[in-house]
Structures are given as C-alpha cells and as structure tokens.
Length: 245
Image (spheres, rainbow, N blue to C red):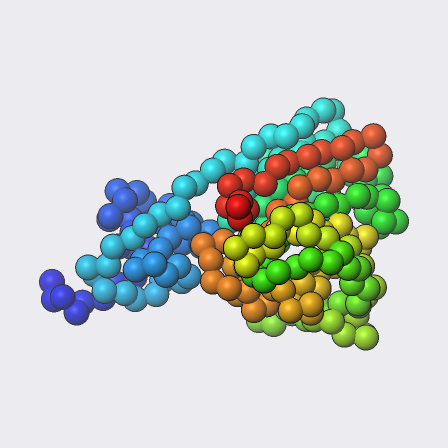
C-alpha cells in the first residue's frame, strides 16, 4: 500500500486497537482519539494509512448515590447525557453538556421526576460547578446577562442577547497559580452553555472550550461538583485534570 494512501480514521483505529469498526467510531465520536497530538474529530475522515493513534482512558460512569427515586452518577466528560440515561434505562431530570463531567441526576419514577423538574424550574436547586480558565481571576463577580440559544445545523450556539432568557452566574476564584485560575461557579438558572458563555463574556473562556474561545486542551475543564435539591445533597469532586498547583 502506498505511503500516501488514505483510509477512514475509524477503520485504521479498529485495526490498530484490534476492536470492531463500531467501537472505533464510538471512541472517535466521544473525542477520545488523538493523532500527532491533535484530536481526531471525524470518524469517517480520510487520513494517511500510516497514522498512529493514542486513545484516552475510558472511564465508566460512577454511581454516586441511589435510592428508590433517583440515581446520581458522575458523568464522564465525553459522554452525552441522553446516551448515559439510556444505558441505565432511566429518565433524565436535567442534562450536562458533552464535555462537562460531574453530577447528573436520573429519575427512577415519573411522579418524582416531575417533582424534581419543578424544583429546577422554580430555581430551588443549588448547582455548583468548577472551571479552569487561563489568566488571573481574583475578584468574585455575578454575571446577570440573558442568553439566547440558536440551533445551527447539528449544534446549538448560545450568546448573550437581550432577546434571550434570564441567566445568573456567581463566580469566585478558588485557586490562582501559574497564570491559571480555578473557579467556583454557582448558577441560579440553567441556560444552554450558560457558564461557558458568561465566562467568555468576562474574557476568561474555559480551557478546552474551543467553541467559545478557550485554549486547546484534551478536554473542557468544566465539572458539575454539587447539586442540592429537596432532601438530597449530591457531591462529586473533580479529578486531577483540574489541578493547577
């Protein structure tokens, strides 16, 4: 085969890893495959047959808490919320962006699901995140700026826009070191891409969030650390990816 020959990325990955084409495509779709230091973003993309791949560690969703009403899991950053819910055969109560890890609540019965959703709708849920940004972030701030979400082809893009829905984020620094800042973000509302858009508006896009101007990284450094509602208080510490000291 010629050195300049090309083949679809997922087929080459399947051969290298000794896995099925479907499994290889799934790894690429989840953003877990790299070649020459760059993420392979399109499974069907044609690349050189001599390409070598590096596959990031695959972690299963960890169960944080379970009772007769809910299942709380630590969502891996590469999982889609809806797909994770399907794998547990349960219903989503809320969702996290693909790229965001942390506490995700699944419902075990429809009556209680509606009760939880009402708590989210009425802003009675405490939602705490942690994010890492480039730059020195020293002062606590509250961003109260409406967000408008627009569907574009296969994705949703959000922006601050007076025609959007109310969105409030309380942001404070936890650690500052080596020109990076680790932030605690508490959101009153839950608009699509809210934290990502609000931090971008301050000039501090999240590391790894290339959609909103963040520095390139192997993942987006945004994690749902704590959700408190009704009599539940679910916590999930961020992993070592968030260490900046």
